[in-house]
Every structure is written in C-alpha cells, then in structure tokens.
Image 1: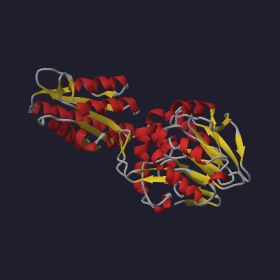
Image 2: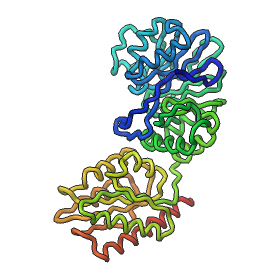
Image 3: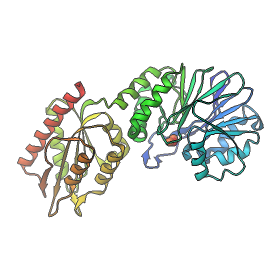
Image 4: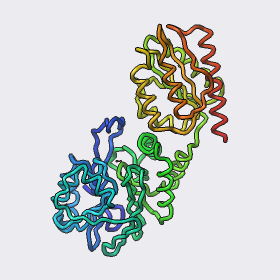
Length: 396
Ligand code: FEO
C-alpha cells in the first residue's frame, strides 16, 4: 500500500500497529517506519524500514515500479529502525547504489555486512540529479545521530527530515490534516522529549538549515507527514528547543507504604494553592516516557522517593537517570521522601538536580517512617514556592 505526496513522490513505508516498547520508549500509539519513493528518470528510494517490514516495503515499491529500475537508495540515518532492512533491500534492488555520507557508511559498516553494495558517497553540499529533480543533502549531525541528514527535493518542495519532526504514531492516515492534530502534536512533543531533547542545539541548527528551504511538506521517518500545519510544528519545536516552559509543576514520586505519596500530595496541594498548574505522577503508574514528555515544558519539578537499601526505589532511580540523560533545561526543583533507618532516597534526587544545575528551592524534605503534620506543612509550603517559581519562569 502506498500514498502519493505529490506527483511522482509516494510514501512506501510500513505502519507498526503493535509496537509498545521502542527500546524502552513506551509507544502507546504504535509507530511507523517511513520510506519514500521518487519516480523520476532515475527512481530513488529515500530511506528504508525496520528489518521485519522489508517484504512490505518491497511489495509497496513493486506495486509502483519494477524493483530493478530503482537507481538510488538514500540513507538519511543509520539507526536500525530505518536501516536494518538495507541488506535485504540492496539485494532486491540489483541496479541501485546506496547514497550516504562517509560517516553514515562507517556506521552501516559496523552494523551490517555491506558485502558488494554499490556506494555513492556524498559530501556536505553535494546534490544528486535524478532526472527532473536535483536532490540536496543537508547534514544534521546529532539530530539524531552523528551521521543524520535531511534530503530535500526543491522541485517538489518536500523535506525528508528523518527522525526530526517525527512522531511514534500509527495511523491509517498519512497527513496532518487527516488526523487529530492535538494527538499528533502531543506525539511530536513526546518524541522530541524522549529522543531529541539532549540535542537541542543540533536540532535548532538543523531546523535553521531546513527553514532556508522552500517547504510545502515535511516528511519525517516516523508518523504522519506535515503539510497543513508546518507553522504550528515549527513554532512548537522552537519553543521546546528554547526551553520555554509553562506555569506548571511536575511532581514525580514512588512510595512504599504511602508516606512519600502523602508528601507528594501535600506538595501538589501547595502548587495548586500557589496558583500554578500541577501534575502528580506515580512513577510506576505513569511510566518514564510520559514523565519525560511532561518534564519538557514544566517549569518546576519535584521528585520524591522513600529510601530503599540506602538509595531511591528502583523506578524513582530510573526516572532520575532518564531525566539526567535527557537534560531538560533548568528547573526549580524539590527533593523529598520518607526513610526508616538510612537516608538516600531524597538525597539521590537532590544530587541529580545539582548535577543538572537546576535551582533547588530548599534542602530535601525528609520524613522518618511517616510524615508529621509539620512535615506535610513544609511540603505544602515548598509546593507554593515551586508554583511561584513556575509562574515567574513562564512569564520571563
Ligand atoms: Fe528513528 Fe534515530 O531513529
């Protein structure tokens, strides 16, 4: 099954309705691996798919043209969700050469037996004439991997943007104006927060390069194609990359016997009382993917964990490690948690905040076994400070 983007350009990828765990990213709406076929004098395939979907890709191509007529296969990104079909695809396209940078070739070579693939190595600034079209290649290192690049077809005004602007979003529709835009933007935000957030500057540079092009469509490697709401998408990306936040505090916690949960509830009440928005997430119920998405544009964050074996509880530790790697821009932060005879839960959160240079609003709030009314009052007061900081940050 294929879908036409414009005359001579078709989506020929695969929708993955069943995936729910994408190397730990909880893909509750599935995903897609997008590949695009340009039917020109020298037919060109832009990207391939994840290996289990190879037959579907080849069947989508052969429904449009003969496989032996494909001249070029462009590899924008070597990560296996987009490149692991290459060994079988290159074998099935006997007259095709793989178009990639030297950096990409080295990554592919590390993953796959490239055997006797025909290669056409491109350098920054190179173009490729395929007939009526001349494709341009825009290097976008670290958005998402060092070898990442965009391909642009000026004659079609289509930007093939690889991971950037993607969403893990399975759908029968292919375009932004055929689906629920709020859901699509939410998935784009979740994708940005979980995949691209640590690479904010490269993403901005990639976007700046892309914006120099005259674009009618942005065709990413995951999810749906942007054609009617490109402006909204780019505005959202600019805001995320600039670290613009909402007047909201995110409270993330785990709890063993309810004490840290009571503290979390008191922090939440303080935030609401302080006039900011608040979200309360039990880390074992909400999951890390959702928490990362909410952390992206929350101005304040509180993390609570009881002490277990001298440290935080396992999923609280996972949340701290995950956020530390994603490096959301500076937040007002609070650590809290209960303990019995050893400390370590709240202290781990405090250490993570300090490593990210977040602004801690006070020393960690700790409660031995269960929080007293005095401790709960301190939690509410800290929540009010988080609210004040959140409102202040969102108006700067
Ligand atoms: Fe969708 Fe970085 O791969």
